[in-house]
Length: 126
Image (cartoon, rainbow, N blue to C red; front, side, top):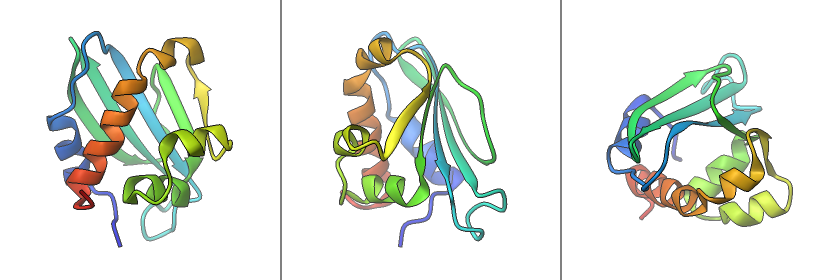
Protein backbone atom coordinates (compact mmCIF):
# COMPACT_ATOMS: atom_id res chain seq x y z
CA UNK A 1 0.00 0.00 0.00
CA UNK A 2 1.21 3.48 -0.91
CA UNK A 3 2.43 5.73 1.92
CA UNK A 4 3.37 9.31 1.11
CA UNK A 5 6.92 10.39 1.97
CA UNK A 6 8.94 13.57 1.56
CA UNK A 7 10.77 11.86 -1.32
CA UNK A 8 7.44 11.25 -3.04
CA UNK A 9 6.43 14.91 -2.49
CA UNK A 10 9.76 16.16 -3.88
CA UNK A 11 9.47 13.87 -6.89
CA UNK A 12 5.94 15.11 -7.48
CA UNK A 13 7.06 18.73 -7.46
CA UNK A 14 10.02 18.13 -9.77
CA UNK A 15 7.94 17.86 -12.96
CA UNK A 16 4.95 20.07 -12.13
CA UNK A 17 4.46 23.26 -14.06
CA UNK A 18 1.49 25.24 -15.26
CA UNK A 19 1.71 28.60 -16.98
CA UNK A 20 0.63 31.35 -14.63
CA UNK A 21 0.60 29.22 -11.49
CA UNK A 22 1.63 31.27 -8.48
CA UNK A 23 1.21 30.68 -4.80
CA UNK A 24 1.03 27.95 -2.23
CA UNK A 25 -1.37 25.04 -2.63
CA UNK A 26 -2.02 22.85 0.40
CA UNK A 27 -3.70 19.46 0.41
CA UNK A 28 -4.66 18.63 4.00
CA UNK A 29 -5.57 15.04 4.83
CA UNK A 30 -7.38 14.61 8.14
CA UNK A 31 -7.94 11.38 10.06
CA UNK A 32 -4.56 10.07 8.93
CA UNK A 33 -3.48 6.83 10.63
CA UNK A 34 -1.18 7.30 13.62
CA UNK A 35 1.67 5.48 11.83
CA UNK A 36 1.47 8.20 9.15
CA UNK A 37 0.89 11.23 11.39
CA UNK A 38 0.87 11.43 15.17
CA UNK A 39 -1.39 14.50 14.89
CA UNK A 40 -3.88 12.78 12.56
CA UNK A 41 -3.25 15.49 9.96
CA UNK A 42 -0.88 15.17 6.99
CA UNK A 43 -0.35 18.10 4.64
CA UNK A 44 1.21 18.33 1.22
CA UNK A 45 2.35 21.87 0.47
CA UNK A 46 3.24 22.76 -3.12
CA UNK A 47 4.64 26.21 -3.85
CA UNK A 48 4.56 27.58 -7.39
CA UNK A 49 6.73 30.44 -8.65
CA UNK A 50 6.71 31.51 -12.29
CA UNK A 51 4.49 28.58 -13.23
CA UNK A 52 6.83 25.91 -11.84
CA UNK A 53 6.68 23.99 -8.60
CA UNK A 54 9.57 25.35 -6.56
CA UNK A 55 9.02 23.57 -3.24
CA UNK A 56 7.20 20.59 -1.84
CA UNK A 57 6.75 19.82 1.83
CA UNK A 58 5.02 16.81 3.35
CA UNK A 59 4.42 17.48 7.02
CA UNK A 60 2.37 16.41 10.00
CA UNK A 61 -0.08 19.03 11.18
CA UNK A 62 -1.42 22.11 9.47
CA UNK A 63 0.35 24.22 6.88
CA UNK A 64 -0.91 27.50 5.49
CA UNK A 65 -1.32 28.41 1.84
CA UNK A 66 -3.25 30.49 -0.65
CA UNK A 67 -5.49 27.50 -1.37
CA UNK A 68 -6.25 24.69 1.07
CA UNK A 69 -8.12 21.58 0.01
CA UNK A 70 -9.15 19.22 2.81
CA UNK A 71 -10.52 15.73 3.07
CA UNK A 72 -10.07 12.43 4.84
CA UNK A 73 -6.73 10.69 4.40
CA UNK A 74 -8.38 7.57 2.96
CA UNK A 75 -10.16 9.67 0.30
CA UNK A 76 -6.87 11.21 -0.85
CA UNK A 77 -5.26 7.76 -0.95
CA UNK A 78 -8.10 6.54 -3.19
CA UNK A 79 -7.55 9.56 -5.45
CA UNK A 80 -3.77 8.97 -5.64
CA UNK A 81 -4.25 5.23 -6.16
CA UNK A 82 -6.67 5.96 -9.02
CA UNK A 83 -9.81 4.35 -7.60
CA UNK A 84 -11.62 7.68 -7.06
CA UNK A 85 -11.54 10.54 -9.58
CA UNK A 86 -10.58 13.84 -7.93
CA UNK A 87 -13.48 15.74 -9.49
CA UNK A 88 -15.96 13.10 -8.30
CA UNK A 89 -14.55 13.40 -4.77
CA UNK A 90 -15.00 17.17 -4.94
CA UNK A 91 -18.53 16.94 -6.39
CA UNK A 92 -19.54 14.42 -3.71
CA UNK A 93 -18.19 16.65 -0.93
CA UNK A 94 -15.49 14.16 0.06
CA UNK A 95 -12.87 16.88 -0.43
CA UNK A 96 -13.54 20.59 -0.16
CA UNK A 97 -11.89 23.95 -0.56
CA UNK A 98 -11.45 25.46 2.91
CA UNK A 99 -9.33 28.46 1.92
CA UNK A 100 -9.11 30.42 -1.31
CA UNK A 101 -11.47 31.46 -4.06
CA UNK A 102 -13.29 28.65 -5.83
CA UNK A 103 -13.65 30.77 -8.97
CA UNK A 104 -9.89 31.47 -9.00
CA UNK A 105 -9.10 27.84 -8.23
CA UNK A 106 -11.17 26.84 -11.26
CA UNK A 107 -8.46 28.47 -13.40
CA UNK A 108 -6.09 25.85 -12.00
CA UNK A 109 -8.17 22.76 -12.82
CA UNK A 110 -5.64 21.56 -15.43
CA UNK A 111 -2.95 21.94 -12.76
CA UNK A 112 -5.06 19.95 -10.28
CA UNK A 113 -5.33 17.13 -12.81
CA UNK A 114 -1.58 17.30 -13.44
CA UNK A 115 -0.90 17.08 -9.68
CA UNK A 116 -3.06 13.95 -9.38
CA UNK A 117 -1.51 12.32 -12.46
CA UNK A 118 2.04 13.10 -11.34
CA UNK A 119 1.27 11.93 -7.79
CA UNK A 120 0.09 8.60 -9.21
CA UNK A 121 3.11 8.29 -11.48
CA UNK A 122 5.62 9.04 -8.70
CA UNK A 123 3.81 6.61 -6.39
CA UNK A 124 4.16 3.92 -9.05
CA UNK A 125 0.49 3.64 -10.00
CA UNK A 126 0.94 4.85 -13.58
